[in-house]
Amino acid sequence: MMFKKIFLLYILVSLASLCSLAVTPGPGTHYASDAYPGFDSESNVLPQERKTPSFLWWRKAKSDDPAKQLALAREYVTDGAYGAAINAYNALVAKFPLSPEAVKAQEDLADTYLYKINDPINALEEYKYLVDFYSSDCDYDKAIAKMYETAKKMREDGKRIIFFKFANTADVRCAFEGVVRRAPGAYFAPEAMYSIVELRIDEEEYAEAIEVCKVIRNRYSSSNQAKAALYKEAELRMILLRSHEYNRDRGLNTVSFLDMAIRLAEDADIRAEFQKWRAEAYAIVEKEAYEAAVFYDSITRKRRGTINAYERFLRDYPASSYAQKVRERLEQLKSTSSAKESK
Image (cartoon, rainbow, N blue to C red; front, side, top):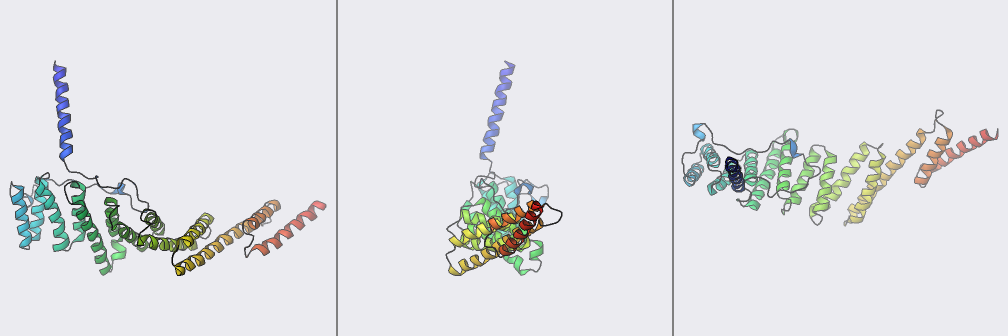
C-alpha cells in the first residue's frame, strides 16, 4: 500500500513538472535545424540565463501587479528616465515571467536600448532574449526584423569609429549570424548572409567567407546576393590560390569552380573576367605540375621514375607551355637510357 502511494506521488510530481515545462517560455522553436558552414560555432557561446528577481532594492518590482509595473516603466520612458525604465522592465520580466506583460516589457526594453539610448549592443541581447524565451508569445517576425535592424546599426556605428575593424568586427558578424540562425527564411536572410561574407573578408578569413558564399548560392539561388556571392567566391578562391600555388588540389578545385562560374555568369563582362581567372588558375596548376615533375629529375633519383614523371605531365598537360621543354628533356633521358642498356 505504501509503495502504491509513493508511486502515485511520483506520477503526480512528474506530471506537474511536464505542465510547468509546457507553459514556460523557452528558446528553440524557430531555429534552423542545420549547421551553417562559415559561421562561428555556438557551442562556445554561453546560453542566455533567465532573468531572476534582484536583491537590490532599486531593481525590484515596485508593484505586485504586472500591468501597473509595465505602466510605471513606460512612464519612466516618457519622462526620459531611461535607467529607471530599464530597471523597471527587467524587474517585471524577472518577477512575472509568464505574464503577458512580460513579453511587452521585454520588447519595450529592447526598443528603449535601440531607439532611445542608441545602444544597439545591449538592444541585441534583449531582442535575443525576447525571441529565445518568448518565441511563441511575441510577434516573432517583427522581433527578428528589429534584431536585424540592430545588427545593421552595430555595423554602421562601427564604421564611424576608427577601431571597428580591429575591435568588434567579429561581434557584428555574430549578430548577423544570430539573425540568420533564428530566421533562415526571412526575406532579408540573403542580405544578412552577404553582410557576413563582407565581415569575414574584413577579418581576412577568406576560407570562411567562401563557405558562406556557398550557402548563399545554394539556399538563396534566386536572390541578387547569390549572383554577388558567385563573383565574390571566385575572387576569393583566386586570392587563396595565388597565396598557395603549391597546392594542386586547391588549384584543380579553383579551375573546376571557375568552369561552373563561367556557365552560370549572365553578364558578359563578368564571364570574361572569370575566363581570365580560369586561364590564370590553370597556368598555376600547370606550373606546379611541371615543378613536381622536375623534382624527380635529379642524379639522386632513378631515371625510370623521372621518365614516368615527365610522361605523366605530358599526358595531363599536352598543350602546356612547358610541353616542348619536357619533350626535349624526355628524349635526352630516353637516349641516355638506351645507350646505357646497349652497353
